[in-house]
Image (cartoon, rainbow, N blue to C red):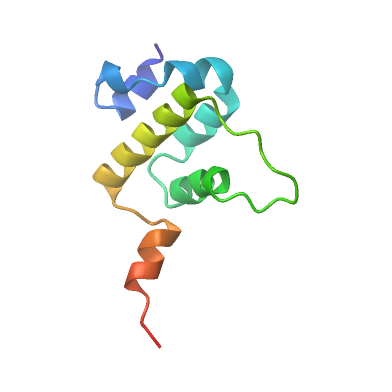
Length: 93
């Protein structure tokens, strides 16, 4: 286990993204770099809201579950800056 990732997870080893680290290390590296920035949610939204012309294959369920756990922890610690938060706080016309 990576000590830097464990520190981000407040040493909660049950949240450690083993599958994400093994199968998509480049994505985990980017998430760690952006952990305490507003870009974290935007980066995750790229995976959730596919705007490309061809369909994505998607993540295996165990990887998707780990990404969701990281997203939930990030929102708990920093609040949400995702598009859904923007929709609920924007003025109505």
